[in-house]
Image (cartoon, rainbow, N blue to C red):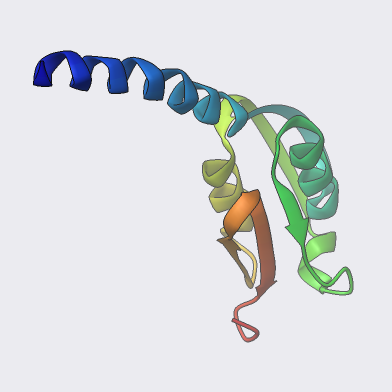
Length: 103
């Protein structure tokens, strides 16, 4: 009886877990575009939404991204690596981006 209950719970949870993983990946091929454009592209391809001060100078930095079905947080880690920006993922896939001084 206990094993049957566990199996039922796993069968119900697994599709939701797979759905969540699918939503957190993106495919982007952009060369020499602003970081703002990359964030816009991620928003178009995923359920993530970004909150940031558009006057931050680092958002104008030119970057190139070529990823296929990459995890959104891995893409963010990569494009923000050489900037003074940090991010934090909040509830409902809201991502706050700010300068290291602002965090």
